[in-house]
Amino acid sequence: MQSTTIGVDLAKSVFQVSVANRAGRIVSRKRFSRSQFDRFLANHEPATLVMETCSSAHHWARVARQYGHAPKLVHAPYVRPYVRRNKTDSADADALLRVNEDPEIKPVPVKNEAQQALQGLHRIRSQYDKTRKQRINLVHGLLAEFGLRLPRATTQFAATLGQQTECLPEILRQALLPVIAEITELEQPLKQIETQLAAIGKEDRSCSGC
Image (tube, rainbow, N blue to C red):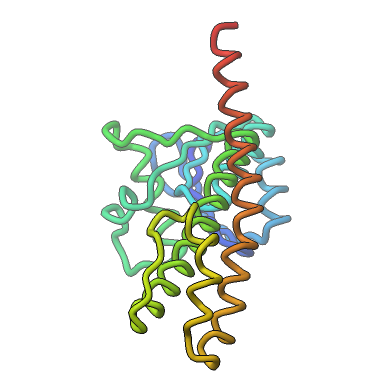
């Protein structure tokens, strides 16, 4: 019978593949490097390609479409109950074939490059913001130990920080200087990304009525 479904356990360098025929019977299991997997997709007849959502899943889904396959992405928690043996790459690939047969599991839409780039911007902004807030909270906590207080609002933080640190013991003040500098340095890339996101949002709104 013609093979119609391919379960792929993605990894950074080695991909495990299980191929099933129309009846759902596994007819082959293979292990590929990245380049071998690309050639496999190029040479294999069009099939349903089932993968877990992960960092590279959307990329390989787009590649699969270019070769005529129908990619299907599934959230990882939905796959685990279908693993029947000890968790291995091969067992995970087999489980993806069983997941494909469950009509209640809805696939994750494949993102295009623009959508992934926008998601990446949000993730970078989140990391900048998280790091900056962590540094600010550190300084707040250390100053509080010496009876000093700063405004909680981050917009007022930098303006009053320099004056307050003058009251600290010199050994601590010197150690805090790089932390304070990092807080200031993080503001610029954070604002740049926020400006980018605002421009993208404005453009999307203007195009929504086109």
